[in-house]
Length: 314
Image (tube, rainbow, N blue to C red):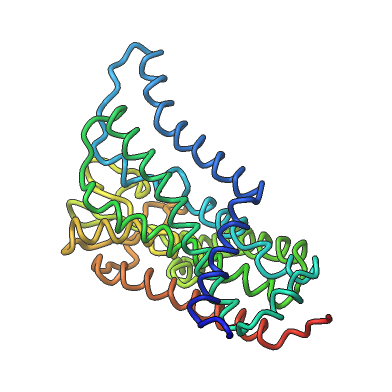
């Protein structure tokens, strides 16, 4: 008797998660992330001790640094989690016995995608738990800890943007090296070209619609653009970014201050910063979430279609 759809799907999820946990590059990335969290936790404390100063408590630490990951971390975790999911199956010939099982290619794809999702949830849960506990021990009591699950979910969504891109490139190229090179090229190209374009044209809003950090704004106590709009101080309450990497921080920011207005200014390289536009925090959040899910959906559909149409020699 043929297995049920659920049996085939759950078997694919287990297969993908076990494969992920056996990857040396994935485990290496996890160790690196833990090391970065440790550095962000203890380095300020150690520096304060060396200078003879009392370390200042930071009640917002736990939900302010995306578990030592950040935009580069989202990209790297997305890359190492699914770099071998499709392309290596074709290169090693394991795709033939895999697709010979009594399950559809759609089930195979959904199982791989779900396995990647659960792997990221488990990984970020470990990192967030370490950061929260470390933040309490080093920086004192932490604010908004009840928002930790929401913050973690936002981190996963940001990473899934790159997961979808890597899956698409792997399904189309069927070559791991080409997939890795193309993904790195896209990441670097978006960061360099997008940043240069925004700087010289003043059209920073374009960055909002690209994968990555997006445009930077701030929530201020009063109107106008400060001389240093990237620094939090008496004038600036919080820095806000619009991109797909900022889903987690924007979720927390909105829940904490739903009526906030975000101000966007020029960089100030040519004279004092000038006001570009203002947006409510709700719109900034909606844009970052909607754009992230659009990328995830579009690239996952392309990857699924490519896998459905792929020729398998066996």
